[in-house]
Image (cartoon, rainbow, N blue to C red; front, side):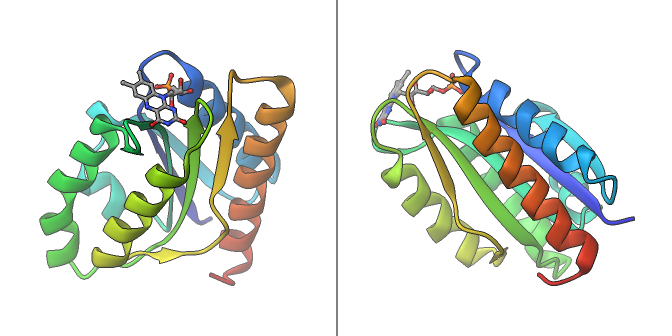
Length: 151
Ligand SMILES: Cc1cc2nc3c(=O)[nH]c(=O)nc-3n(C[C@H](O)[C@H](O)[C@H](O)COP(=O)(O)O)c2cc1C
């Protein structure tokens, strides 16, 4: 069974809710083994053990949240040294924009390198059931692609 790693950073809880919804959607497919970790508890070993990576974080000050940036900074060399290139997906929580966080994440991920497998999803404003449904769909779609081996 493909292994899907979801790593999230959340200060006020929004990205945490979205990450949980994405996990639910992914697990509902029944075709992947999902691991959900906070950025602080995750490292390069989790990435190299995975078949797909979903990053969930907020936009802060026009860019990717500091916690997620730290995670990517500290895993860059160890993951690159092992030649690990994974399909990845992005889920961004934002007040009213989110595009800066997506741009920065894409730039970093292209350098790893990682393959962006699906369109990034930006969830603006407080987390509503609709936004949780979008996050769940992203998780399910990414999981389905991993299961089918199309990424
Ligand atoms: C320090 C800080 C900077 C922020 N900067 C932005 C921003 O540039 N663009 C935006 O759309 N929202 C911005 N926000 C709002 C957050 O992206 C939004 O509240 C998000 O849902 C927080 O997610 P979290 O609770 O998972 O950290 C900012 C919030 C904080 C605390």
